[in-house]
Length: 209
Image (cartoon, rainbow, N blue to C red):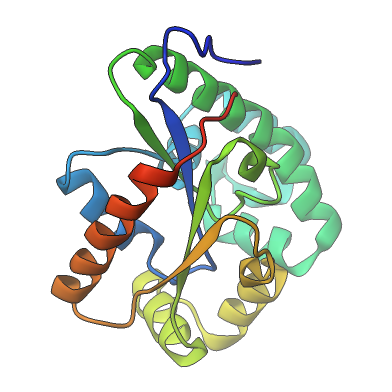
């Protein structure tokens, strides 16, 4: 589907992606404070698990994640990140919903915003990079990723490794992309983003979705 370019000449999409714990949310929050619209797919994915109808689908496909009819999200995480088939099954359930939500958001905002950021760890897996004028890739050294995620999510090292080993190395994708190093102060990170956005604003190519 393509947005009417005649009516929205200035609007373009920019992706934000990176491995777990690499600072996607931090970058997204800075951009929001700078006045940009950020569509956070991780947030919408979490909201899905509060939807009763969606939980029925999850129960049908992953009954072992329920005990006394109570959903255990941590159990689902263990299942999908320890088995590639389970991961693909879950993605087949979640990706169509997320793409549809993104399309609705873009069409709702297309007349009032010239930039929309798409924040997602699965940007490339979902094929969304082809709609983006540019992709910002968040990066931090492995040990920092590990410490951030283990502390934030209260998981052990093995669980962390199961997750990160299943995620694509987005740094290997080079076309129209910029690496954002997040292991620095928020002041410096904000300054880096402002400088980058000034450059991108002048050089962005409009895309359809």
